Image (cartoon, rainbow, N blue to C red; front, top):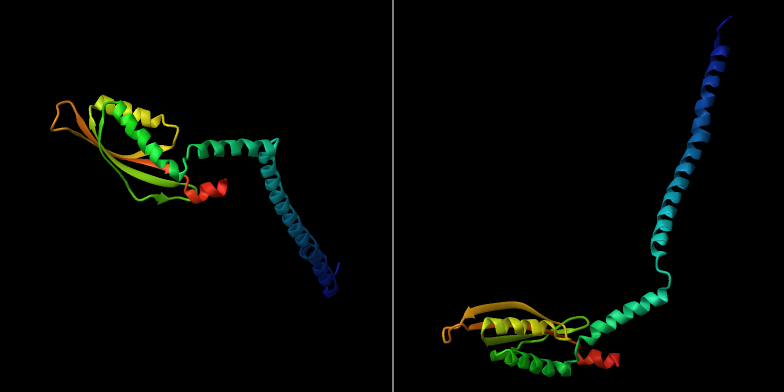
Length: 182
């Protein structure tokens, strides 16, 4: 058999056909398959998110339950005009426990988005057991309060007594918001 130019051309065409088929047919189809696979992965992720949110059977019931929780916390926020009542209540708690409130000063209110904080600087004289019982009573108040700082010192005047200087923060609903909610 003779191997000439014609046979060489035939061999090159024969070898080039699979390369051309890969370049013009298989490569674009593989790209399409990869795009479809990526879309399927995205859709599968979205479907998984929907499955996670499916545990809420009745959205209306869930909203009502959350509204009840909000109402509970709003009930613990007094209106601005009730702050004096709370101050009086705290003063009475202190005297009931045998403590002597030496000074009570309200500081500048700190506004928040849905509430306002009113820091109250207090200085109380008495025995530690009474002061501890007073703090437990403050904790049991129906209103939201906190004590961000406190200093305790022994009293130099009376044996067995102490002086407590602390800030009691009361949270209340501003008058403008209380009127808007009515």
